[in-house]
Length: 122
Image 1 (spheres, helix red, strand yellow):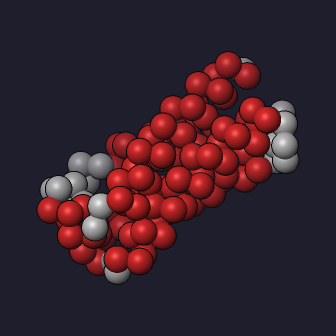
Image 2: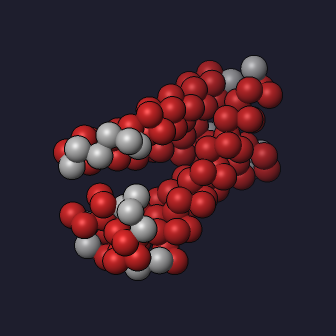
């Protein structure tokens, strides 16, 4: 079980680190122009940067506390926070009828829930 949790944690961390970094580095206009960021039209520049920061911090929180043993309770809390991120992301995508990304949102939500439950129990 520990190996499955670590695989999920690392996979989620890579995805959220990459996704968050894009939101932090690129402008909102560049994200919208990429074709996969239509959701960003409804958000301010600072909101997009804030979402990126939350994703990067969540990615770090998935791995660092558990790996170092320093405040390991932060790992399941980070995973639970990313569940919330995915619930909101799913709602936003549904609102603008952007259904292509929904399977990815659901998989990320389920993986984050798996990590949160598994690490809270462990």
